[in-house]
Length: 313
Image 1 (cartoon, rainbow, N blue to C red):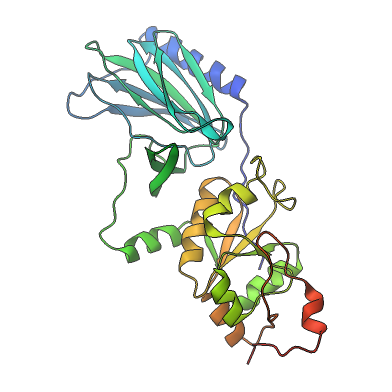
Image 2: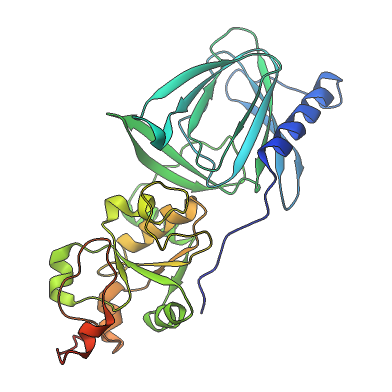
C-alpha cells in the first residue's frame, strides 16, 4: 500500500487576490447580504470548488481569530469596509515575532501555505472582508507565540475558517483526532511502501534505538526537528526532502508517530505512520539493524550483512 498524497490543485496568489477583489466588489454592489453579530463573527461561504473556497466575514469591535495557519492552503483576503488589525508571525527568515499591520478598506493581502497570523477588529465600526483559500480550507493549526518560537496548541480538520480552537479532554481524544486525518500502515505495508520509494523516518531517541535496533534505509530525525528537516521549502531540510516525497513516521509503539505524521500532513506533506511502531515491526519478523546511526543519517543496509544478529523474532 502506497502512502496517500494529499496534494491538490491550487490557484496562484495573484489569482486569489483577483478573486477576493472581485467578490469584494460584488459585496459593495449589494449582491451579497452581510450581517453583524455582536457575540460571534458572522460568516458565510460564497463559493467552493475543487480549487478554491471563498468566504464573506463580518467583524464587530474586538472580534478576532486566534493565531493560526491554514493547513497548507495559500490564501488572500480583501477588506471590503472598515479596518482590520493583522498580527503576522515573522516566520523562519528572522527571529520569531509578531508584527501588527493595519489593513484598511480596499486592502488585499495574499499569503503562502506556511503563513501564520491572527486578525482582529480593534475599531468601533464593523469591518467586512472576503477571504479565499486554495486548495479549499481543510485543516487549521492553532499556536501560541512564546520566547521567539511558535508552540502548536491544537490541530483541527475543518472546512470552516471561523472554527474555534479545538480542545481535548484527554490525550486519547487528541490522538484519535490526529489519526483521523492520516494514513496508518501495518509494518508489512510500510515495508512495501518503502520498497516503492517512501522513506521511513525514525523519530525515536537514541536509547530506544540502542535496545530495539534500526531499520535499514530509514532516516534518523529527532522529533523536535522533524518538520524543518522534511519540508521541501525549509532552509534546514534534508537532501531527501523534495516535493512529493512520501514519508512514513516510526516511533517505539505507534503513538508519538501518529501525532508527528498529523503535523506533517498539516503542512501538506504526504505522511503516514507505522501501526505499533518498531515493536510491531520486529514482531512481524521484519529485519532490523543492530547499532546506532547518527542523527539525520540514513541507516546503512550493509550493517545487516555483517553477520550481526537481527532483533526480529
